[in-house]
Amino acid sequence: MSHPTNIFDLAGVEGLRKSWRLDPQAVRQVRTLLLKRGLGDDEALACVPAERRDEFAERVALHALTLDRRCDSGLDGATKLLFRTAAGMLIESVVLRIATGRTTLCVSSQVGCAAACDFCATGKMGIAQNLSAAEILDQLVQAKQLLAPEGRTVRNLVFMGMGEPFHNEENLYAVLTALTAPELFHHPASRVLVSTVGLPEAMLRCVRRFPGVNLALSLHSVRQETRARIIPLAKKHSLDELRRVVREANRIQAVDRSSGPTLMLEYLMLAGVNDSLEEAREFAAWCEGLAVHVNLIPFNPIDDAPHLAATPRPQREAFAAVLKAAGLPTTIRYSLGADVAAACGQLVRRENRARAMATNAALREL
Image 1: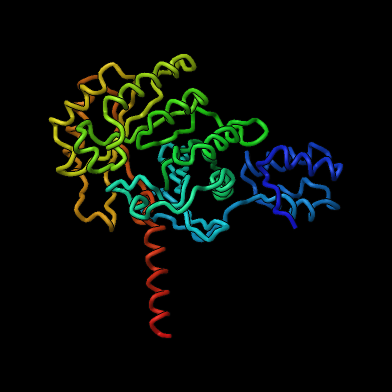
Image 2 (image 1 turned 180 degrees about the vertical axis):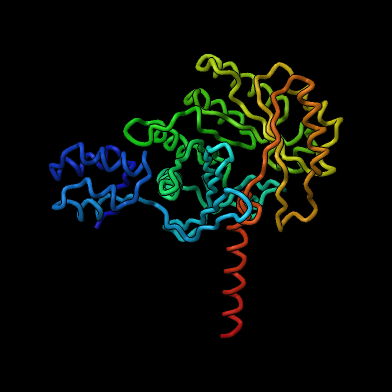
């Protein structure tokens, strides 16, 4: 038997619908309940006539991932979701319930990551495979189903999980198309953010094709040597090149937007690495003339980088004050989910380690 057609496949599901002579409204209702309202599978399938329901469920896949584990923070509103792909690989998503009542979902785009950033648990894993568009989208579907009983839904979707989104560019664009499609999620483009370590040509392709989607550049330093030390891929692209890309992205998005800057500069604050007030002044100078919003990020320590430490809060605030004094919109991100290893890749990394240790122990017993 052929593989089931995914619910996100408009043409594929339409072909099945016609062969079954099913009312188009039934399929629209299934998608509305599942993708937009986040109701359960059974509730969504109840829209299909009883005589076709079993066949629909067999031939149309509502999910591409299996939920392996859910970890709820005892400290704040974070929930980490550990998923298993059809190939048996583990990936993670994080639901962030913000105190303001908004809910953000952080999704993964790859199993592992080739960027190998020094501060990132996912980067220590290397790259295993790209996620399919359906596997990325299903993270949103299952998060919505988790939140629906709470009276919540996903307001903001950010590609800040495992992987470099632009290393999976084709599937990323398929996901962005599905997210904003009225027939599927109808999610506002302005509430989607794609974060990248800085692949210039891909960034420009993205803003040209999806000018309403927000971009975030993981900058982390405006000193080339420092940036290249913590982000190996930075050796391929100079800071001058990235600055030109940011300026061009500003120009492209200004045509489409009237609501101000859309490009975020992410800056992970590492004690003794990039957090001096001198570098803050250099950062402010680098941003001069750019329409950007700076997001200062506290470092969540990871097992694989004991040589890195978080910048103390007073120093973070002093760094932010320098940027604000220069007229830069600046926020300090509040980290959630420290007790459930919510930083990118931490839980998968620990889980893979634990399973490898268990396997090795079992082999030693043979």
